[in-house]
Image 1 (spheres, rainbow, N blue to C red):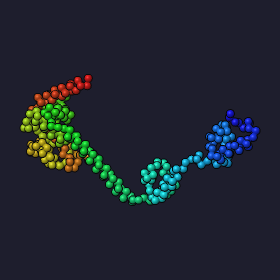
Image 2 (cartoon, rainbow, N blue to C red; image 1 turned 180 degrees about the vertical axis):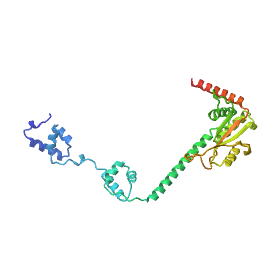
Image 3 (tube, one colour; image 1 turned 180 degrees about the horizontal axis):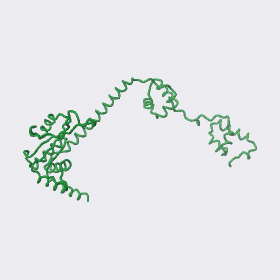
Image 4 (cartoon, rainbow, N blue to C red; image 1 turned 45 degrees about the horizontal axis):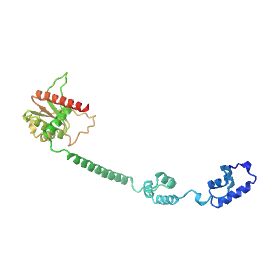
Length: 286
């Protein structure tokens, strides 16, 4: 039965019983169950002044860890280092050593910047290595290129980068412009597949006037396997001093324009091929 203050004629006797149990090592819960006292306020008053048994005290297993954390901090360790060494949370480290003075920096600002740059260089080198490995693995996926595959690749390239006639402005000429040497090589191989003679090809350079035009001519002549003398007069783009250009330096060669002479029939076939490809793609989407 639950006890209440009004029901006790001998509270002191009840206290003696509670104290006896307490000294035997009983917890408050065990005393409550033994004496059937379910009023926490009364129960606390009955054992007032009696220390709880050792086994009920809150564990202090982290005391040694806390002391070790303080020792490491005084040795100049950082929060990250202490956290890694002791396997505890950062919030615990902060709680344990927050009152201690900050350790003196191990490195000067110049040394820290040098270490950061060194670490960044290592990371970039590792990333570049992973990138190159991925490229090599993908490169091996491309087996010998068939005529059909080259045909489809060249068609897609032309429709993406080549000139196209509009209903309001019919210009039935095959003209291709690009700055990527690989793209130019694939396009020229495509024209060879279509039996477009090299004598029908005209080459022209689109480039900023501030670039090395002669060097660009030599670069593209080698890519296209032609003599630089066959190039038409280049189209020079005026330099705007207010514009910050990133396509500068030795790697900048402008764009190469490849025009096919007498190409109206070729252009119309390209349009037809492309519409056929789109139609087949639509079938696959159904």
